[in-house]
Length: 277
Ligand SMILES: [Zn+2]
Image 1 (cartoon, helix red, strand yellow):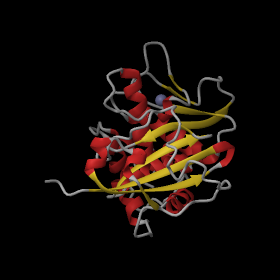
Image 2 (cartoon, rainbow, N blue to C red):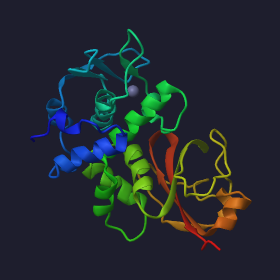
Image 3 (cartoon, rainbow, N blue to C red):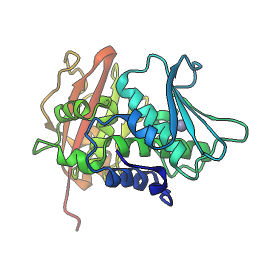
């Protein structure tokens, strides 16, 4: 690896910065070493420490960003650890990212899930941007598409790709929905309640609330699967998930469920949009 930080000068957006790194290092394997990459980019050490119960990862750095040092909470799984390191590297490399006066970046589990880079609150915007950078660095959209082996979107592919890219299934599922050309959304549920929804802009509005119950007529309701099992991608009534305006936009809606441990499950929704008049 010959990459150096000077070659990234002037790149300010999270996606462009991740893309630039891949352009400069086109032969990076899918599961490349974050340690080696970080060392090339002036991160002097990556440590695991029992950081406080609220922080999942931290970036300690020189005020003018001459060097940085990353701390990841002890006990973080290896795949989540890669994402946490990517997130802190994002804070280090993104020129506009500065911690508040007299502090360092200390990022919580909730920070590591923020997605809205258009957020008005500066602190939350920086967290969402660091996540965007980590996702695009670890799972570049073109490499997801290039390694996708099914004709149709499929959660079994999400599981397989998460292994190839050495990332968590949750992180891969979000990047997969963003990368594929099809109109997809991801809903994460626990014990029958909706916990998160990841819905790119082209996907019609989902008519169910976060922290509300999953729809009674959905395949996910009473799926009866054991952890690790996946249903077929099956067509469902669009009304199951979508409100009237959404229903008018789609020709067909399909749903697929992956059961996980502790009552968690992932639902992939695939909408085929009606032709615009
Ligand atoms: Zn952060």
